[in-house]
Image: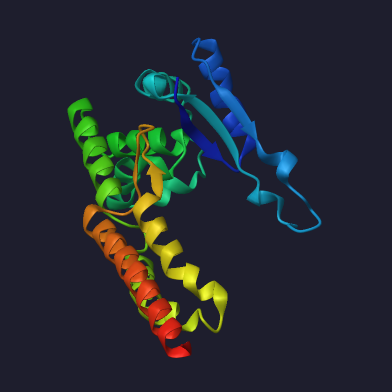
Length: 228
């Protein structure tokens, strides 16, 4: 049994409602309440508390269907709900990025599009979900940050090893960056865990690690020979 995060939210009521639906449909789950880790002494914004529901990865597809049916059947659109002001393209984006919205907004978007004469079939939904998974596997939310991290990795792999003889901890920065690039993972909406960095960038991670090792050996031998 491999548990993964099925839903997470800063809204405790949403998580409790999802838990109720899962329990009613005999889907085993674990509720993670992070309130016990919240320390008002250091963090004064209680909205930072995140609640999570963990379920077995094997139950993801069934649980998704159950939640979709539940919200579709219990959907009542308030007159002043903010999504009514969204354009068709903005509502379509909610459909494409389902993982960034809660179930209510997702079903609301589909209903509003339907009322505007835009019907999205089940086959189209499946295609959209597949495309979203591929996008999340290959793309980054902040690609510039990834490029900057890789650049820093190369810089510290060469200069950091030299500077580490004077400031010891610098030696570990390039190693830390390379291992983060090689080992970091992320969870997709279907519960699958994949490498955070794509194959091309993980090759950079390998090069940074190799360069770090080479220059560590080089500078160690250099200074040992110089001191003799």
